[in-house]
Length: 88
Image 1 (cartoon, rainbow, N blue to C red):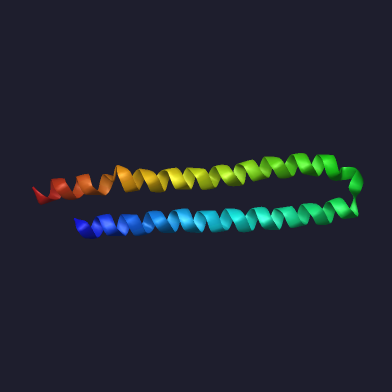
Image 2 (tube, one colour):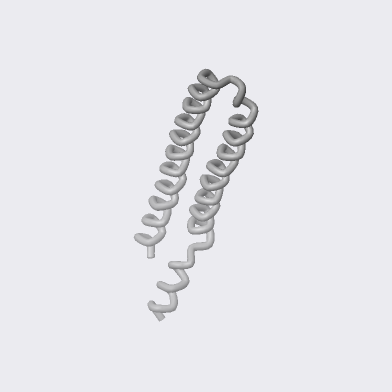
């Protein structure tokens, strides 16, 4: 039982950590490409900015969803209920 709890804690940490890393790298690459394209074609800056902010929101939303799933597994672990029923 304690092994499952420790593995779930490790998995939750990996989900949150790797999700944050991926979101940060993705937003960084997207921001640099936005600046490159805005420098090349300044007349498209407003259109590109709208699309960039939309994508930033989607990237952050996927990270927040991953964090929510990880915290759900950390607090209300469905695996523990299965182990408890098998142990009876």
